[in-house]
Amino acid sequence: MKAALGTFVAAGIAATAFAGGALAQDAYPERPIDMVITFGPGGGSDTMGRTAAHLAEKELGVAVPASNVSGASGNAGLTRVLTSPADGYTLGTLIALTVSSWAAGLGVGQPDQFDVVGVLQSSPSMLFVPKDSPHKSAEELLAFAKANPKALKVATSGFGTMDDVTLRYLTKQGDAMTNVPFAKPAERYASTVGAHTDAIYEEPGDVAQFVQSGDLVPVLVFADERHKDFPDVPASKELGLDISGLDNFRTIAVKKGTPPEIVERLHKVFADVTATQEWHDFCAKTYTCTENMSVEDANAMVETFYKKVKDLLAQPS
Image (cartoon, rainbow, N blue to C red; front, side):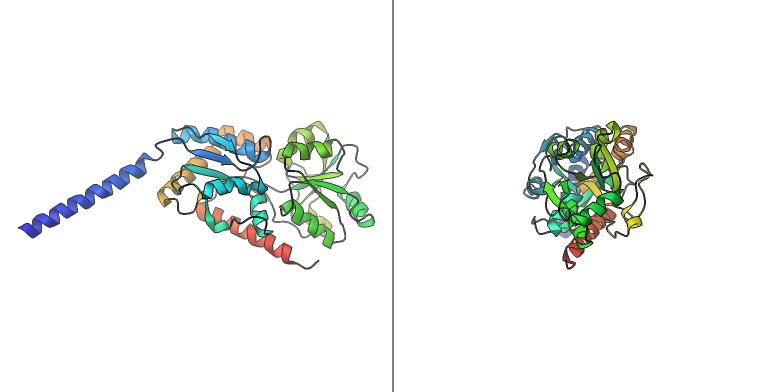
């Protein structure tokens, strides 16, 4: 009788503990969730992060305050994510530029430190020239670079980024240009619009206003195929340049070790966010719409990108 009673009590305790755990999971989130934007105000990552945070609030039922923690190609902000508890209450923007910096040895981050809960944007990068540039096409730009090594100045987001990797690749092809890094996006855009630099490496959405005004002219897209929104701009593959696969993706990530049920909850939230008309209008305007990915596929995408950049950097000069 005592044994039976003990078994009953033990079962009751286990059931209560299980129910308590289930209730705790069901209750997530119980308080505001911090969105760490890993770049400064005014750029594409900032706009993406804030738009996503705003729409996620409606799905989560709690505030998702966004704060900019910029520096070190996004690594400063991700350090905050990694030093916070793995409980789903600290999100961070994890983008291709930062992953590229890891591959270049400029950050201590690794793909396996994070779980990507949403791939929100992706776009191939392009070269743009100012409206009064003497180089009206990619062919003219590359021919000048070949004849005048390092004479052309290209505004980029920094060393160790896809921008830098691409310029290094062009140098190996005999089309050497000078990397001129800018920490702040607005300064980078202004440098080329004002013709202080000869070109800018950027995805079209971030400079859409300047493209639409005619102040920046796209001349080359780094991809195997032409961009559907810029059908007159040649793809790098057409010109014999094998430098595709470095699309600038932007994701939302949490620290690895976050409970799987919370990771899946957040994944569903951001899938719902990207399905809204408001998000569709936003991504269409910035040429960055992309299909939803599972957490596993998103993590694999980041790992593949990381390895590709490492491989490109390892190629002999």
